[in-house]
Amino acid sequence: LKRLNLKDNHVFMTFDKIGMAEKLENLYISNIDIGNVDGIGKAPALKELHLTNNDFTGPFPDTIFHLRDTLESLYIAYNSFSGPLSPKFGTMTKLKEFYAYGNEFTGKIPVEIAKLDNLETFVVAENLLS
Image (cartoon, rainbow, N blue to C red; front, side):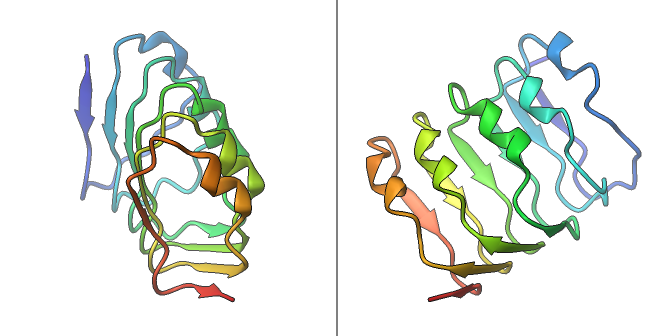
């Protein structure tokens, strides 16, 4: 399985065994109210992750930084992530697209973002950045 789209469904899921999905490259889990993404960083081949409109709150989950060697596109818009954008974003070397509008991120955009040579699109509109 290379692509899984569960968008706009109300499903309960965990990511305990996502490491077994060796070919999964695209995961669309927007608007499904999953609660958290604990363990998703163990996905060995994930290139595209859609987490838009899931009512996430609090800081951005560190587990996603474990995808730094594979993740190319990350969509986290229309949640309620808060706090500063982590300097760890600078480790996401494959990242080409980052859409994080409509959250509650604060502070400054980390300078480490400038290290991302592959980054083409970086959208953080509708946040509380300074």
